[in-house]
Length: 150
Image (cartoon, rainbow, N blue to C red; front, side, top):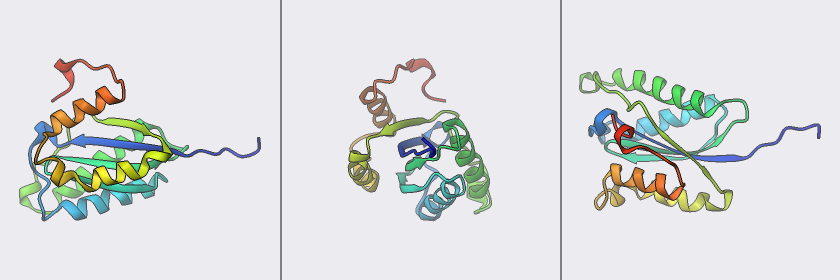
């Protein structure tokens, strides 16, 4: 086959360090746009980005030219530096060390988009910790409770 073709959707989620509520209404929209720009720059076209006060969700197409680890490293590093330039209240902004990245069936992208769009309502009923643990179980990811949170 002379071409290399790929279409791998991934759902990424990670939180602020210690799940502090640092993503406020002043920075939220700009943060999602900035994260989308990072994805585009890495040829990982963003489909939907959203989140809530202490975490983000990113649905994007994973470029065949980059590893998952490198994508996450750049998303966190670049956005953390950017947020710190947005005011004194963000000077101590940090992302958690870990992350979740899950493959998404192309037929399920609309459901994931709706899920990301509904984060504010969703988190009136469920914490990020419960949401993340539920995702791990749904995707059959083995994990050790002792090391899941920083």
